[in-house]
Length: 468
Ligand code: DSN
Image 1 (spheres, rainbow, N blue to C red):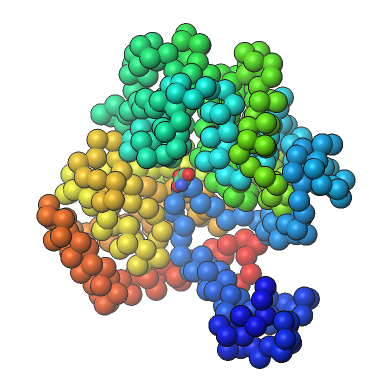
Image 2: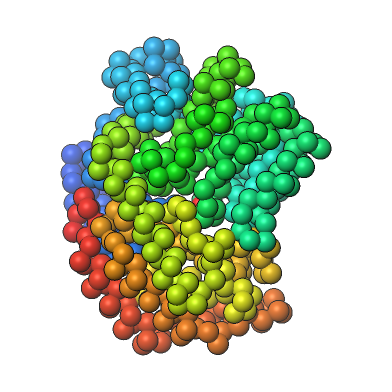
């Protein structure tokens, strides 16, 4: 922090010398009102709107407390008992506690809790078990996979040969294609899991294919980790060699990730754990974010309480209710419904790229769901024809079936209000129309009315643990 620089940018302070009136123990609102106000504004935005993005959630105040702890200041390159810095006696205990909780929650013999997020975690796994140029097979990004499952613009397809598989026309993973491609190309690893899959992942079937061709099976359970701990989705642990999860989605922890090796993984390669450790550091990362690791530990502690099972159950019940209500209003859903926390609306029958309109229109009334491609999207990733919805964050706020009906009604009203906007074929006309549409969102009083309704509704369901 350079005080004099702050003085120029922030007229709230007259700073004498390097620190001037600022001191190291000032509260944030006193020290940096500009940043404080932005944090307060984001707090307000989250309270006044409903998060329906399936990969987001609201962490507890206990998790937030661990995140903002003094552990943020500590370097701890290495692993418990083998660090490259002194002063890590407590850090070792924090990391060991989090590891032990992860092992207990997921019933695995080995875990690495240091990945900064899901993307480096996947990269670490590939670099641990594959030679450059070997083949990785993951679900095509546009069909609901992830960038790091081998998407053509991701580094994962630069270092390794990527062979995507797809969804069937009825929105299920095309296991026949997975089997055919695997037999033909003998991949080094097959990845199951993704970001827009509304149905249960068939771990057993994937395992049969991977075992038949001698490939590693990686289950990327980032979206469904909380449902697995809460026993609302089958665990991949008996089927996969490796399991990767981010920690901030249904698991409701801080933004981070974990890599787990199963008994099956260790039976295939007894050194798999050490290989993963080496791939993280020195392979890809430096010092672990100990505050995040502590936050993950707290989230795992919460996830192992009996209440969490009820939470996970409610997430799925809410998603099913929302799906049924949307279908009752005439909407089409990919795969015809959901088994988990996520719904993928197929808006293509009302025109191409419809997600481009519905996403910002819903944001205008205070519902945050994201536009998303659908399998065989007739449009492009930037103007996708779907809308992705999820219930983890809304369930954290205590919403149940009646509220899902209300949300479906708001979505229906909004979709009807914008029905005449159609995406032109011509690219220049397209950009102009989107600009016009977004400008209209700000001036059309119809949105103001619904926005007030959503805001009042949100006040009935404050985000637990957040300052108001
Ligand atoms: N970006 C995440 C999601 O929204 O699903 C995946 O990394």
